[in-house]
Amino acid sequence: MSNYQPRPEHRFTFGLWTVGNTGRDPFGEATRAVVNPADSVRKLAPLGAYGVNLHDNDLIPFDATPAEGEAILKEFKQALSDTGMKVPMATTNLFSQPIFKDGAFTSSDPKVRSFAIHKAMHSMDLGAELGAETYVFWGGREGSEVDAAKNPLDTLKWMREALNFLNAYQMDQGYNYKLCIEPKPNEPRGDIYLATTGHALAFIETLDHPENVGVNPEFAHDTMAGLNFAHNVAQAIDAGKLFHCDLNGQKPGRFDQDLRFGQEDQKTNFFLVKILEDNNYQGPKHFDAHALRTSDADDVWEFAKGCMRTYLILKEKVQQFNADAEIQGIIQELNGGGDSAAAAGFSKETAQKLKAENFDVMALTNRPLPYEKLDQLTVELLLGVR
Ligand code: GLT
Ligand code: MN
Ligand code: MN
Image (cartoon, rainbow, N blue to C red; front, top):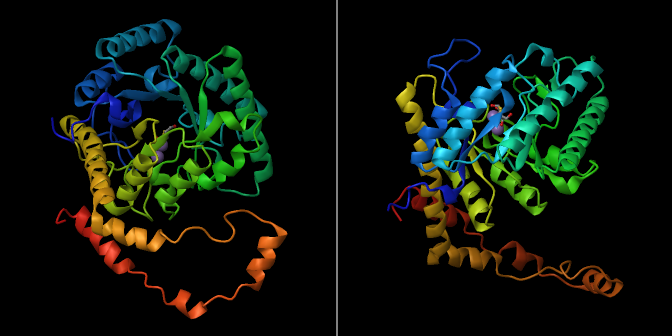
């Protein structure tokens, strides 16, 4: 079996909204037909995916009657049990309906905020029924264009109230969800609150149960903010907060493209896969992307295969990088110097000793840093000539 054959143990997942994307954008209508969620499950399973994720309304339309909802759920559950596919993550659509045009948890209307929490509780029930273990909060409409309209400190308070309430609800129900905040800097709002992974990490510590809340960072979102996604993922791992990860492609300075994983910037993606693999990240690798608007229904499955295959190719490159004697020799030479005086912690004695120490500043300044050589070796490895 080829090294690039996806298997369920790789824990690759796709949102129903990703392979089900119809190609609609702000300037044009759909270019593909609506996909039945049960069909997406049956298509993804033989490709080697582990599962699908969903918003409440990806599966059960907002205006479905209870009887219609039941029938859809039955068909979907049948597809899951026939294929062995899982639903590891669920989330709430708090952005499509016009009632959320000025935010859900951060609407200035308390009734809208209450409705958003009501909708999220029902959606948590649905996710739990399907076996989801992670519950994501992407605040797509939680933002502003007119800063005179609301106090951003109020919006943080409202967001905190909602997340505390919903976490208490799910604990009370015995659902055992891990909650994740998914940050994004803008789009569809001019500015979205909790704009980046770092913002979310800081906010989580203000919640009632920070231990139960982590992040679901997305490559495209932090890249839109001009940030280094691999660095942000590292910070989430360091904080013990990488509960889930959204992988896709994005060019900086563009609209939210949600491109196939690895379509752009293979070097950053290589270091992202390296961070995940070297740190034994065990959560789902969720491709939150969609096929290009130009794709037909068949090409959508090429898109899905491509996301998983590129991840596995980069994983193999990581193994090659970690085993490359020349590359590892340079890294060892650069980083093998041991600890600084700070590593053992502060004491009056060590501080005094350090203050009295004489440093050979010229020698330290002139230590060789062969970064050109190291980066070229990395590039050659990635380009397949090494
Ligand atoms: C939407 C968004 C994604 C979020 C999804 C979860 S929906 O497609 O662009 O990044 O992960 O709500
Ligand atoms: Mn996105
Ligand atoms: Mn996402």
